[in-house]
Length: 343
Image 1: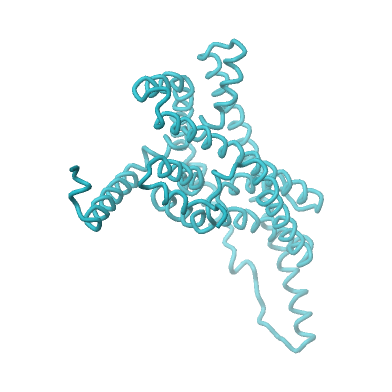
Image 2: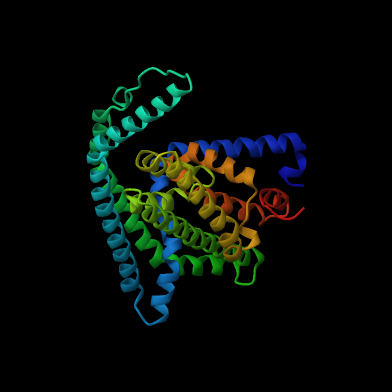
């Protein structure tokens, strides 16, 4: 009789729960080290199909990995340059937007006064501290040095992960056995997780591109910037796109009035609904779906553990936990509860 059989169910559950709490506390304490590793694993998953495509065409693994990493560096440099130009233009335009918003308020106050409503004079300058905004942007710029070090570590990690993936798989296969259920399930879980990461990125690209195109057609300033923000924040389910919609909605309100703001909200909602309910189900398998409650809870949970990285990678991390739980008979029911399967 093993230890688990000798313990009462409450004691066994308490021990398992305590072990989980200890592990999570350790991960939170080591988040500064673990977070870059998670980001490296995430991007290694995204770029793994490219690495496979190159090696199948005879490109040596070292050159293929270097090509993938250099491609990521090029994309990152382009994004940094784009964000730098866009944010600089946005900060310089703040006084202009403040003046337009004050004009909108004057018009609104005159309309309300016609109906006997006399609100006090509101000056936007009393609520918008441009100096504070500039200070925040400058603070972000000062933090670029430390961010650059983390990015360098992540890029090196991606390169090593791409190079070491076949060796790691061979070691695991040799020790577990190529035909053993644990090895087959591990390989299948890895494939499903990579599938989700790639599919999620494609769906977010559709959301970001659709948002940018609509805003550009409507004439909202910095449409490409808001489309990029929508692409990134769409990795955070439910909450991300709502946050991404706030800046373009405010700009549409300033530039075109309430009708413009309503149009932006409606368009982004339609684009998101189409991407999440039409495109994502067609591209992602049923095994990758999570219940809405689990999705929302995972964002909060992993955000507490790993901060911003946890929020952005909440769904891949939760899917990994779900697939892990489904690997064992005793915990398979927990994994099934996490899914969004049919009743």
